[in-house]
Length: 73
Image (tube, one colour):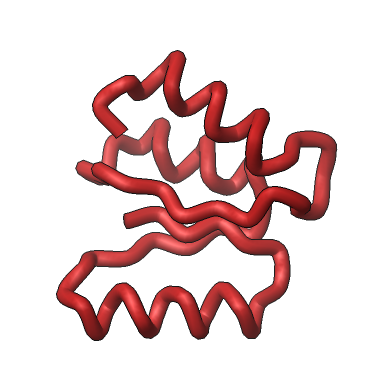
């Protein structure tokens, strides 16, 4: 599970929830960090993202790129 959220407190809260549910969690503060994590090939099968994030790429654009580059997610 990759959690992408610009607000550290919200990201931590979401991560804790998914960890408590048994997921292995990776965290990113923006879309560029998320892409870097995905490029490392960490066996991520799901992404939980905010729509409005810091940087030029929002959550919808990130989701579109993930769908193109990693269609199994």
